Length: 192
Image 1 (cartoon, rainbow, N blue to C red):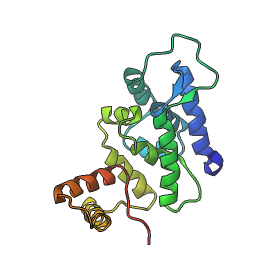
Image 2 (cartoon, rainbow, N blue to C red):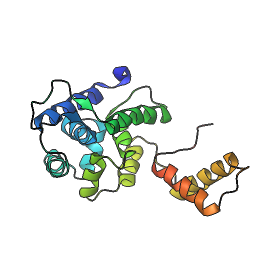
Image 3 (cartoon, rainbow, N blue to C red):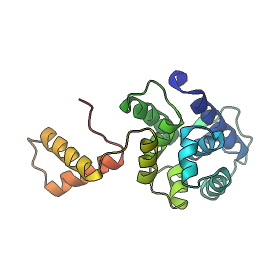
Image 4 (cartoon, one colour):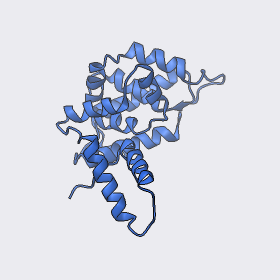
């Protein structure tokens, strides 16, 4: 799975494990991955987060205030990965593919992390007064893939849903709500 990961992305994953151990957690979650990306320091994720004044001490403080208490038993040598962490890794791979990249870098890890708004990492970023959409836009801008206007995306998503659901009777407001939820979850039109 990690064969397409850049050295920096691999390092961020390793650092995530180290941060989980440092916090005496028995798992690796999204919060640890965020710490790993920031601590790695030279990847695109760290560069973008630095533009938002997100540094290691601040993220650590937020993680410690939001995360689980340290384990009362001995921390296992192999930490279990949370379901959200696993989804973020899979989202990162998807983001790489959507951008037509043949590698997975820290920027893709960050984009994947932003697609898991219920994770601890997203709560950490929200606690730092960051909007996930703004961070996503900043990553895509740095990559030269400036995001489409949200209104244009909404129109495209509604049209796509209307086409797929042509035989169904669904209120337009519900179609619009589903389209907005899809966009917020990272939906982008298929490349033609």
